[in-house]
Image (cartoon, rainbow, N blue to C red; front, side, top):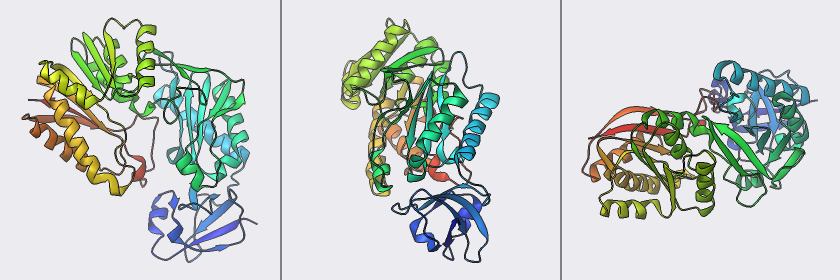
Length: 400
Protein backbone atom coordinates (compact mmCIF):
# COMPACT_ATOMS: atom_id res chain seq x y z
CA UNK A 1 0.00 0.00 0.00
CA UNK A 2 1.30 3.46 -0.91
CA UNK A 3 2.07 5.65 2.09
CA UNK A 4 0.35 9.02 2.51
CA UNK A 5 1.81 12.34 3.61
CA UNK A 6 -0.82 14.58 5.21
CA UNK A 7 -0.10 18.31 5.19
CA UNK A 8 -0.67 20.67 8.10
CA UNK A 9 -3.38 23.31 7.89
CA UNK A 10 -2.01 26.50 6.38
CA UNK A 11 0.48 24.72 4.14
CA UNK A 12 -1.83 23.52 1.40
CA UNK A 13 -2.27 26.43 -0.99
CA UNK A 14 1.27 26.52 -2.51
CA UNK A 15 1.09 22.81 -3.36
CA UNK A 16 -2.48 23.13 -4.64
CA UNK A 17 -1.40 25.98 -6.90
CA UNK A 18 1.38 23.84 -8.35
CA UNK A 19 4.50 24.47 -6.27
CA UNK A 20 6.20 21.06 -6.37
CA UNK A 21 8.01 21.22 -3.02
CA UNK A 22 6.57 19.93 0.24
CA UNK A 23 8.74 21.31 3.04
CA UNK A 24 9.37 19.38 6.25
CA UNK A 25 7.44 21.92 8.34
CA UNK A 26 4.39 21.38 6.11
CA UNK A 27 4.15 17.67 6.95
CA UNK A 28 1.55 16.93 9.61
CA UNK A 29 1.75 13.15 9.72
CA UNK A 30 2.80 10.22 7.57
CA UNK A 31 0.43 7.29 7.18
CA UNK A 32 2.46 4.16 6.51
CA UNK A 33 6.20 3.49 6.64
CA UNK A 34 7.72 4.54 3.31
CA UNK A 35 11.38 3.78 2.65
CA UNK A 36 13.60 6.50 1.19
CA UNK A 37 12.72 6.88 -2.49
CA UNK A 38 9.31 5.18 -2.27
CA UNK A 39 6.20 6.63 -3.88
CA UNK A 40 4.00 8.62 -1.51
CA UNK A 41 0.66 10.36 -1.96
CA UNK A 42 0.28 13.91 -0.68
CA UNK A 43 -3.09 14.96 0.79
CA UNK A 44 -4.46 18.03 2.50
CA UNK A 45 -5.74 17.86 6.12
CA UNK A 46 -9.21 16.83 4.87
CA UNK A 47 -7.79 13.96 2.84
CA UNK A 48 -8.14 15.59 -0.57
CA UNK A 49 -5.40 14.43 -2.97
CA UNK A 50 -2.76 16.98 -4.03
CA UNK A 51 -0.22 14.84 -5.85
CA UNK A 52 2.33 12.07 -5.74
CA UNK A 53 6.12 11.99 -5.53
CA UNK A 54 9.15 10.27 -4.03
CA UNK A 55 9.81 10.23 -0.28
CA UNK A 56 13.04 11.86 0.99
CA UNK A 57 12.86 11.61 4.79
CA UNK A 58 16.28 13.14 5.54
CA UNK A 59 15.72 16.18 3.32
CA UNK A 60 14.31 19.61 4.20
CA UNK A 61 11.99 18.90 1.26
CA UNK A 62 10.62 15.40 2.06
CA UNK A 63 8.44 15.28 -1.07
CA UNK A 64 8.82 16.80 -4.50
CA UNK A 65 5.50 16.36 -6.27
CA UNK A 66 5.92 14.72 -9.67
CA UNK A 67 2.28 14.41 -10.71
CA UNK A 68 -1.18 15.49 -9.59
CA UNK A 69 -2.48 12.06 -10.59
CA UNK A 70 -2.33 10.12 -7.30
CA UNK A 71 -3.23 6.89 -9.11
CA UNK A 72 -0.02 7.01 -11.17
CA UNK A 73 2.63 4.44 -10.33
CA UNK A 74 5.95 6.31 -10.56
CA UNK A 75 7.76 3.29 -11.92
CA UNK A 76 10.16 2.76 -14.83
CA UNK A 77 7.41 2.98 -17.45
CA UNK A 78 6.16 6.27 -16.01
CA UNK A 79 9.69 7.72 -16.00
CA UNK A 80 10.25 6.63 -19.60
CA UNK A 81 6.99 8.30 -20.66
CA UNK A 82 7.90 11.58 -18.96
CA UNK A 83 11.38 11.62 -20.51
CA UNK A 84 9.92 10.90 -23.95
CA UNK A 85 7.40 13.72 -23.53
CA UNK A 86 10.17 16.16 -22.59
CA UNK A 87 12.14 15.20 -25.70
CA UNK A 88 9.07 15.40 -27.93
CA UNK A 89 8.07 18.97 -27.11
CA UNK A 90 11.65 20.18 -27.42
CA UNK A 91 11.74 18.71 -30.91
CA UNK A 92 8.37 20.12 -31.98
CA UNK A 93 8.48 23.56 -30.31
CA UNK A 94 12.19 24.38 -30.11
CA UNK A 95 13.63 22.31 -32.93
CA UNK A 96 16.14 20.66 -30.59
CA UNK A 97 18.35 18.96 -31.45
CA UNK A 98 19.24 20.81 -34.65
CA UNK A 99 22.14 20.43 -37.10
CA UNK A 100 23.76 23.59 -35.71
CA UNK A 101 22.81 22.94 -32.04
CA UNK A 102 22.92 19.47 -30.52
CA UNK A 103 23.77 20.57 -26.99
CA UNK A 104 20.72 21.47 -24.88
CA UNK A 105 18.79 20.71 -21.69
CA UNK A 106 16.53 17.70 -22.05
CA UNK A 107 15.16 17.44 -18.49
CA UNK A 108 14.83 20.54 -16.33
CA UNK A 109 13.71 18.87 -13.10
CA UNK A 110 10.50 20.52 -11.83
CA UNK A 111 9.80 22.13 -15.21
CA UNK A 112 9.47 18.72 -16.84
CA UNK A 113 7.62 17.09 -13.95
CA UNK A 114 10.77 15.23 -12.92
CA UNK A 115 11.92 17.09 -9.82
CA UNK A 116 15.31 15.79 -8.72
CA UNK A 117 16.50 14.99 -12.26
CA UNK A 118 18.54 17.21 -14.58
CA UNK A 119 19.70 15.89 -17.93
CA UNK A 120 21.74 17.76 -20.54
CA UNK A 121 22.46 16.42 -24.02
CA UNK A 122 25.99 16.87 -25.40
CA UNK A 123 25.82 15.46 -28.92
CA UNK A 124 25.96 11.69 -28.50
CA UNK A 125 26.23 11.85 -24.69
CA UNK A 126 23.85 12.75 -21.88
CA UNK A 127 24.97 14.12 -18.51
CA UNK A 128 22.63 13.76 -15.53
CA UNK A 129 22.36 15.03 -11.99
CA UNK A 130 20.35 12.81 -9.63
CA UNK A 131 19.40 15.16 -6.81
CA UNK A 132 16.92 13.07 -4.81
CA UNK A 133 17.09 9.59 -3.35
CA UNK A 134 14.04 8.66 -5.42
CA UNK A 135 15.80 9.49 -8.68
CA UNK A 136 19.03 7.91 -7.51
CA UNK A 137 17.26 4.62 -6.74
CA UNK A 138 16.04 4.54 -10.35
CA UNK A 139 19.24 5.66 -12.02
CA UNK A 140 19.66 2.67 -14.31
CA UNK A 141 16.09 2.92 -15.57
CA UNK A 142 16.56 6.65 -16.14
CA UNK A 143 19.81 6.08 -18.01
CA UNK A 144 18.21 3.42 -20.20
CA UNK A 145 15.27 5.70 -21.02
CA UNK A 146 17.56 8.61 -21.86
CA UNK A 147 19.60 6.49 -24.24
CA UNK A 148 16.52 5.08 -25.94
CA UNK A 149 14.76 8.44 -26.31
CA UNK A 150 17.79 10.41 -27.53
CA UNK A 151 19.86 7.72 -29.24
CA UNK A 152 22.80 8.73 -27.05
CA UNK A 153 25.72 6.32 -26.82
CA UNK A 154 26.36 6.97 -23.14
CA UNK A 155 25.10 8.60 -19.96
CA UNK A 156 27.37 10.26 -17.43
CA UNK A 157 26.53 11.25 -13.88
CA UNK A 158 27.86 14.38 -12.22
CA UNK A 159 27.69 14.98 -8.49
CA UNK A 160 26.05 17.75 -6.51
CA UNK A 161 27.53 17.09 -3.06
CA UNK A 162 25.56 19.79 -1.24
CA UNK A 163 22.17 18.48 -2.38
CA UNK A 164 22.98 14.79 -2.50
CA UNK A 165 24.49 14.59 0.98
CA UNK A 166 21.28 16.04 2.43
CA UNK A 167 19.38 13.30 0.60
CA UNK A 168 21.62 10.57 2.00
CA UNK A 169 23.22 9.97 -1.40
CA UNK A 170 26.94 9.31 -1.82
CA UNK A 171 28.09 11.76 -4.53
CA UNK A 172 29.86 10.21 -7.53
CA UNK A 173 30.93 11.18 -11.03
CA UNK A 174 31.62 9.18 -14.12
CA UNK A 175 30.00 6.83 -16.61
CA UNK A 176 26.53 5.58 -15.68
CA UNK A 177 25.56 3.66 -18.83
CA UNK A 178 27.09 2.89 -22.22
CA UNK A 179 30.65 3.05 -23.43
CA UNK A 180 32.89 5.49 -21.57
CA UNK A 181 34.50 8.44 -23.34
CA UNK A 182 37.14 11.02 -22.49
CA UNK A 183 35.29 14.07 -23.79
CA UNK A 184 31.96 15.65 -24.67
CA UNK A 185 31.65 17.08 -28.18
CA UNK A 186 28.63 19.15 -29.21
CA UNK A 187 27.55 22.17 -31.22
CA UNK A 188 25.79 25.38 -30.22
CA UNK A 189 24.82 28.01 -32.77
CA UNK A 190 27.23 26.45 -35.24
CA UNK A 191 30.22 26.53 -32.88
CA UNK A 192 31.85 23.21 -31.97
CA UNK A 193 32.86 22.48 -28.38
CA UNK A 194 34.94 19.66 -26.92
CA UNK A 195 35.07 19.46 -23.13
CA UNK A 196 36.43 16.89 -20.66
CA UNK A 197 33.83 14.27 -19.71
CA UNK A 198 32.57 14.12 -16.10
CA UNK A 199 35.12 12.55 -13.79
CA UNK A 200 38.05 13.75 -15.91
CA UNK A 201 40.48 16.45 -14.93
CA UNK A 202 39.24 19.84 -16.03
CA UNK A 203 35.57 18.88 -16.26
CA UNK A 204 33.32 21.92 -15.84
CA UNK A 205 30.75 23.19 -13.38
CA UNK A 206 27.30 21.61 -13.02
CA UNK A 207 26.85 19.31 -16.04
CA UNK A 208 29.80 20.94 -17.82
CA UNK A 209 28.25 23.82 -19.76
CA UNK A 210 25.63 26.50 -19.07
CA UNK A 211 22.91 25.80 -21.63
CA UNK A 212 20.59 28.20 -19.81
CA UNK A 213 22.35 31.13 -21.51
CA UNK A 214 22.03 29.75 -25.04
CA UNK A 215 19.31 32.14 -26.25
CA UNK A 216 21.02 35.09 -24.54
CA UNK A 217 24.28 34.15 -26.29
CA UNK A 218 22.42 34.07 -29.60
CA UNK A 219 21.08 37.58 -28.95
CA UNK A 220 24.59 38.81 -28.20
CA UNK A 221 25.71 37.25 -31.48
CA UNK A 222 22.98 39.14 -33.31
CA UNK A 223 24.12 42.42 -31.72
CA UNK A 224 27.85 41.91 -32.24
CA UNK A 225 28.30 42.57 -35.96
CA UNK A 226 30.94 45.24 -36.52
CA UNK A 227 31.42 45.76 -32.79
CA UNK A 228 34.36 45.46 -30.43
CA UNK A 229 33.32 43.14 -27.59
CA UNK A 230 34.50 42.59 -24.00
CA UNK A 231 33.32 39.42 -22.22
CA UNK A 232 33.86 39.67 -18.44
CA UNK A 233 33.71 36.42 -16.39
CA UNK A 234 33.69 34.61 -19.72
CA UNK A 235 34.13 31.06 -18.30
CA UNK A 236 34.29 28.80 -21.38
CA UNK A 237 33.79 31.73 -23.73
CA UNK A 238 30.24 31.05 -24.86
CA UNK A 239 29.32 34.71 -25.27
CA UNK A 240 32.71 35.42 -26.88
CA UNK A 241 32.24 32.68 -29.45
CA UNK A 242 28.69 33.80 -30.23
CA UNK A 243 29.93 37.37 -30.74
CA UNK A 244 32.69 36.19 -33.07
CA UNK A 245 30.27 34.12 -35.15
CA UNK A 246 27.94 37.12 -35.24
CA UNK A 247 30.60 39.27 -36.90
CA UNK A 248 32.38 41.08 -34.06
CA UNK A 249 35.58 42.80 -35.17
CA UNK A 250 37.43 41.93 -31.96
CA UNK A 251 36.54 39.99 -28.81
CA UNK A 252 38.38 39.88 -25.48
CA UNK A 253 37.27 37.31 -22.90
CA UNK A 254 38.46 37.44 -19.28
CA UNK A 255 38.13 34.81 -16.55
CA UNK A 256 40.12 33.80 -13.47
CA UNK A 257 39.91 30.02 -14.07
CA UNK A 258 42.90 28.67 -15.98
CA UNK A 259 41.02 25.56 -17.11
CA UNK A 260 38.15 27.62 -18.50
CA UNK A 261 40.54 29.91 -20.38
CA UNK A 262 42.34 26.89 -21.86
CA UNK A 263 39.04 25.37 -23.03
CA UNK A 264 37.85 28.70 -24.44
CA UNK A 265 41.10 29.22 -26.33
CA UNK A 266 40.88 25.71 -27.78
CA UNK A 267 37.31 26.39 -28.91
CA UNK A 268 38.38 29.59 -30.66
CA UNK A 269 41.08 27.69 -32.54
CA UNK A 270 38.76 24.80 -33.41
CA UNK A 271 36.18 27.19 -34.84
CA UNK A 272 38.69 29.30 -36.75
CA UNK A 273 38.05 32.55 -34.89
CA UNK A 274 41.30 32.78 -32.92
CA UNK A 275 42.23 35.74 -35.08
CA UNK A 276 39.20 37.62 -33.73
CA UNK A 277 38.87 36.22 -30.19
CA UNK A 278 41.50 36.19 -27.49
CA UNK A 279 41.26 35.23 -23.85
CA UNK A 280 43.13 36.43 -20.78
CA UNK A 281 43.34 34.74 -17.39
CA UNK A 282 42.90 37.07 -14.46
CA UNK A 283 40.55 38.87 -12.11
CA UNK A 284 37.85 40.47 -14.24
CA UNK A 285 37.64 43.60 -12.09
CA UNK A 286 41.38 44.17 -11.92
CA UNK A 287 41.90 43.62 -15.63
CA UNK A 288 38.93 45.87 -16.37
CA UNK A 289 40.56 48.65 -14.36
CA UNK A 290 43.80 48.06 -16.28
CA UNK A 291 41.88 48.42 -19.54
CA UNK A 292 40.45 51.71 -18.26
CA UNK A 293 43.95 53.00 -17.57
CA UNK A 294 44.80 52.26 -21.19
CA UNK A 295 41.72 54.13 -22.38
CA UNK A 296 40.19 50.94 -23.80
CA UNK A 297 36.48 51.09 -24.69
CA UNK A 298 34.15 48.51 -26.21
CA UNK A 299 30.95 48.75 -28.21
CA UNK A 300 29.46 45.73 -26.39
CA UNK A 301 30.33 44.50 -22.90
CA UNK A 302 29.01 41.25 -21.42
CA UNK A 303 29.13 40.84 -17.64
CA UNK A 304 28.17 37.36 -16.41
CA UNK A 305 29.67 36.70 -12.95
CA UNK A 306 29.25 33.37 -11.15
CA UNK A 307 26.55 32.89 -8.51
CA UNK A 308 27.08 35.45 -5.73
CA UNK A 309 24.27 34.48 -3.33
CA UNK A 310 23.65 30.85 -2.41
CA UNK A 311 21.21 31.76 0.35
CA UNK A 312 19.25 34.74 1.68
CA UNK A 313 22.04 35.73 4.08
CA UNK A 314 24.38 36.41 1.16
CA UNK A 315 22.02 38.67 -0.82
CA UNK A 316 23.21 41.98 0.65
CA UNK A 317 26.85 41.23 -0.15
CA UNK A 318 25.89 39.99 -3.61
CA UNK A 319 24.08 43.23 -4.40
CA UNK A 320 27.14 45.26 -3.39
CA UNK A 321 29.26 43.14 -5.71
CA UNK A 322 26.78 43.44 -8.59
CA UNK A 323 26.92 47.21 -8.15
CA UNK A 324 30.72 47.19 -8.24
CA UNK A 325 31.14 44.92 -11.26
CA UNK A 326 28.48 46.75 -13.26
CA UNK A 327 30.14 50.08 -12.51
CA UNK A 328 33.37 48.74 -14.00
CA UNK A 329 31.52 47.17 -16.93
CA UNK A 330 29.65 50.41 -17.68
CA UNK A 331 32.92 52.37 -17.68
CA UNK A 332 34.19 50.18 -20.51
CA UNK A 333 31.22 50.84 -22.82
CA UNK A 334 31.40 53.45 -25.56
CA UNK A 335 28.68 56.10 -25.55
CA UNK A 336 25.66 54.56 -27.23
CA UNK A 337 27.15 51.10 -26.77
CA UNK A 338 25.57 48.05 -25.13
CA UNK A 339 25.93 46.33 -21.77
CA UNK A 340 24.54 42.81 -21.37
CA UNK A 341 24.62 42.02 -17.66
CA UNK A 342 23.54 38.85 -15.90
CA UNK A 343 22.78 37.33 -12.51
CA UNK A 344 22.34 33.61 -11.85
CA UNK A 345 21.68 34.10 -8.11
CA UNK A 346 18.15 32.88 -7.52
CA UNK A 347 17.93 34.57 -4.13
CA UNK A 348 18.41 37.96 -5.82
CA UNK A 349 15.12 39.17 -7.31
CA UNK A 350 14.99 40.83 -10.74
CA UNK A 351 14.07 44.12 -9.06
CA UNK A 352 17.01 43.93 -6.66
CA UNK A 353 19.38 43.08 -9.47
CA UNK A 354 18.24 45.96 -11.68
CA UNK A 355 18.58 48.42 -8.77
CA UNK A 356 22.14 47.22 -8.17
CA UNK A 357 22.95 47.54 -11.89
CA UNK A 358 21.46 51.04 -11.98
CA UNK A 359 23.52 52.10 -8.97
CA UNK A 360 26.65 50.73 -10.65
CA UNK A 361 25.91 52.56 -13.90
CA UNK A 362 25.44 55.80 -11.99
CA UNK A 363 28.66 55.17 -10.02
CA UNK A 364 30.37 55.07 -13.41
CA UNK A 365 28.92 58.47 -14.26
CA UNK A 366 26.76 56.97 -17.00
CA UNK A 367 23.05 56.60 -17.75
CA UNK A 368 21.29 53.67 -19.35
CA UNK A 369 18.01 52.56 -20.86
CA UNK A 370 16.87 48.95 -20.74
CA UNK A 371 16.19 47.30 -24.07
CA UNK A 372 15.05 43.99 -22.62
CA UNK A 373 15.42 41.59 -19.71
CA UNK A 374 15.49 37.86 -20.29
CA UNK A 375 15.84 34.64 -18.34
CA UNK A 376 16.93 31.09 -19.05
CA UNK A 377 16.57 29.49 -22.46
CA UNK A 378 13.25 27.90 -23.43
CA UNK A 379 14.52 24.38 -22.78
CA UNK A 380 14.64 25.37 -19.07
CA UNK A 381 10.89 25.54 -18.30
CA UNK A 382 9.51 26.13 -14.80
CA UNK A 383 6.05 25.64 -13.27
CA UNK A 384 4.20 28.95 -12.89
CA UNK A 385 4.10 28.53 -9.11
CA UNK A 386 7.81 27.67 -8.85
CA UNK A 387 9.54 31.05 -8.65
CA UNK A 388 12.69 29.37 -7.30
CA UNK A 389 13.30 27.94 -10.76
CA UNK A 390 13.46 31.37 -12.41
CA UNK A 391 16.92 32.29 -11.18
CA UNK A 392 18.59 33.74 -14.29
CA UNK A 393 18.36 37.43 -15.18
CA UNK A 394 19.96 38.87 -18.33
CA UNK A 395 19.45 42.59 -18.97
CA UNK A 396 20.43 44.34 -22.20
CA UNK A 397 21.13 48.05 -21.68
CA UNK A 398 22.09 50.92 -23.97
CA UNK A 399 24.66 53.09 -22.22
CA UNK A 400 24.48 56.88 -22.67
